[in-house]
Length: 102
Image: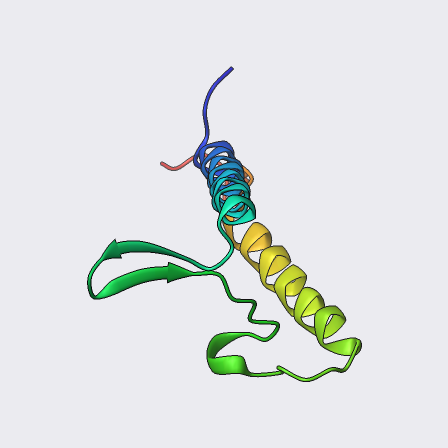
């Protein structure tokens, strides 16, 4: 099976999702054992916190609609990227309307 750029992109995306979810699971299992903080250096600690909003706490309210709105935006972006990255159909031959050259 020939690997097209679209299939390669889908594969890389799938791999990124798997790595992302595995790293989240791994860090959450670490925090189950010691929920306060992990001291990495004297000036750097890893502390568990939950940000229910997006960048800088945007949409960080108690509204139940925030998750739905952000999910809809994310799905729209994914759909737009999938349409943008879809393979182009092969070009159709142009009919010779003038007859043979000559």
